[in-house]
Amino acid sequence: MVYLTRKAEFSASHYYHNPEFTPEENQRIFGKCNNPHGHGHNYTLEVTVKGEVDRRSGFVVDLKELKEIMNREVIDAMDHRFLNKEVGDFKDVIPTTENLAISIWRRLQPKLNLAKLHRVRVYETPDLFVDFYGEA
Amino acid sequence: MKAYLTRRYWFCASHRLHCDDMSAEENLAAYGKCNNPHGHGHNYFLEVTVAGHVDQSTGMVCNLVDLDNFVKEKILERFDHQNLNTLAEFQGMVPTTENLCIGAYDILHKEFHYAEVDKVRVEETMLNSFEYAGGREIRY
Image 1 (cartoon, one colour):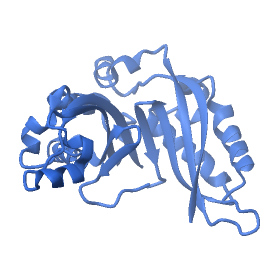
Image 2 (cartoon, one colour; image 1 turned 60 degrees about the vertical axis):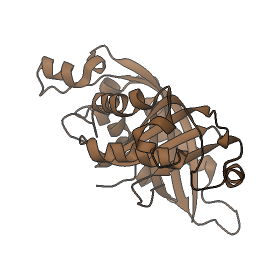
Image 3 (cartoon, each protein chain N blue to C red; image 1 turned 45 degrees about the vertical axis):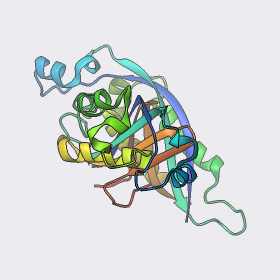
C-alpha cells in the first residue's frame, strides 16, 4: 500500500454564525469570526489517497486525473467564494475548517475510482489544520 | 463526524543533555555538542492535535480559544525562555525533545478536558521532530 498526497490552494471568505444562538452567544463563542461581513483565508488542501502501485504504470493513481477531480469538485466551487453564501454545503452548516474538511471529503470520495481516499487535510493558516478520515 | 484539529505553537528554550549516571566520557559520546555544560537553545515548534466529533451547533471539535488559553498558560508561559533542565518536569530526567514531547502530552492529557488530546509533535529544528500519543500508535 502506498499513500500519495496532492496539494492545492484556494482563497475564500467565511464567517461563523449560528442563527439558533443569541447575538451575545454568537459573539462569545465565535469572537472575531462572527463578523457578518466575513473574513478570508488562503486555504491549503492536502488530499491523500492510498492504493497498490500498478505494475505497468508504476502509479497509485493518475495524478492528472486526481488534480482534475480536485479542481472540479473543490477549487472551482470554493476558490474566491464567500463560503456561507455561495457554496451550498454551508447553507445550514457553519463553514469551520472542521466542516470544510468533511464537505471536501464528501465531494471527492464518490468521484475517486482508482484509489481509496485516505485523508483530507485543510490548512486554514500555516498554524492550524484539520484532518478528516471519513470517520462517523 | 470525527475530525482531528492541529494547532501549531512555538517557544524558545535552552537545555543541556547530560545524564548523571554516565561518566564524562560516556556523556560526551552519547550527547556530543549537546553535552556542553553551559547549555544551548532551540526554537521549538509544538503541534497539538485534538480529536472529537464536530459539534453540530458550533461546527467545532474544540473552541480554539480554550486550546490556545490552555497551551499558553500551562506550557508556553512555563517553558518559553527557560532552561528546561531547571523545570520540575525534567528533574531526574534528560530534557531531550523525546522527553519534552512526552512532558507536553502529559500536561495536556491530564488537564485539558475540552476535547480528546490525540497527539503532540515537537520540532526541535527543521531537521528533526518527535511525536507522542500516550504510547498509542499514531495515525497517518
